[in-house]
Image (tube, rainbow, N blue to C red):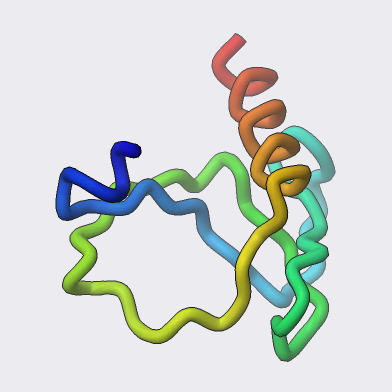
Length: 77
């Protein structure tokens, strides 16, 4: 709902470089359509203007979003 009405998007960083840290700081992405094996950097959360967002590469499943939220909850306690 926030993303639909605010003109901004809450996003986390995505990388193709295998991380040294595991969950909750990172989680491997299972989003179909990504060109490479990728990881979500859960600790790198940003709010971006929708104007800065390019074309969609892939879409995370509800389960993957739940795992990112679980990681955020672990990090912030």
